Image 1: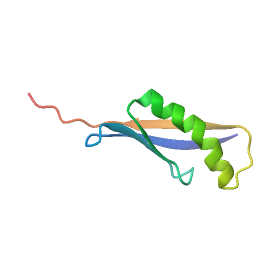
Image 2 (image 1 turned 180 degrees about the horizontal axis):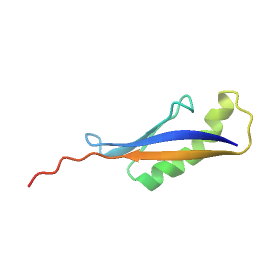
Image 3 (image 1 turned 135 degrees about the vertical axis):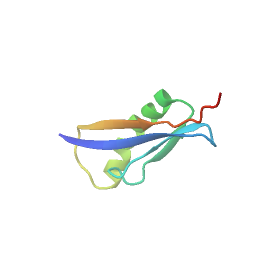
Image 4 (image 1 turned 180 degrees about the vertical axis):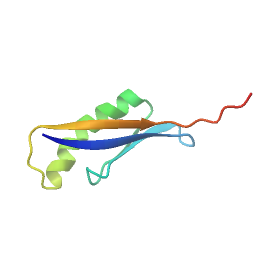
Length: 73
């Protein structure tokens, strides 16, 4: 089974989570919460893979998240 990596990063300026992937061409999504973004990826990824000629029915996704914040005290 093929595994695709999706990177999830927090955009401080826009206050949204952003999903991108080098493995799934065309995948660029954003959402206000991490859970909502993961759901969007689950819905869109199969369609994008099909548009890119991938005919697999089952695959796994590895979500990697990153969030950096400036903390002042």
